[in-house]
Length: 92
Image (cartoon, rainbow, N blue to C red; front, side):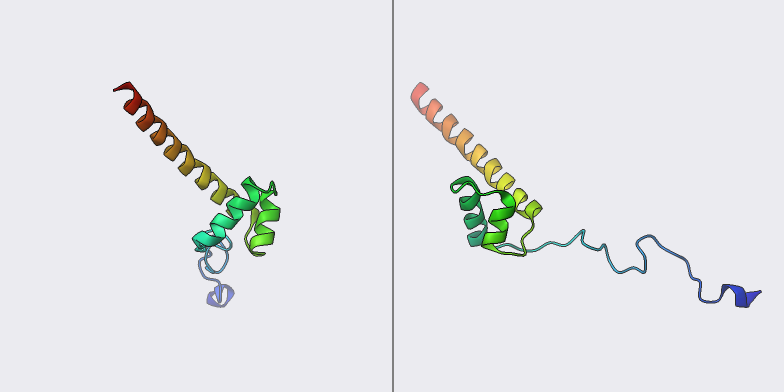
């Protein structure tokens, strides 16, 4: 009876515990590359995939999308703060 179960351990999700696969990886992208990607997408009109491939070939489309979203979010906050300061200065 014992010989039948030899080599069979408790199986876990995700195979043999090799990590999470592609998910969970984080790559640090320098600010110079981020600025170049934003420039290519916003000023030159390239698609996110084209900009990522041109600036650094191993940057994926979703990473470029994340960079652009962060840029737009930060600019939105900066613009709203500038607008608030200008209005409060003019009104008082």
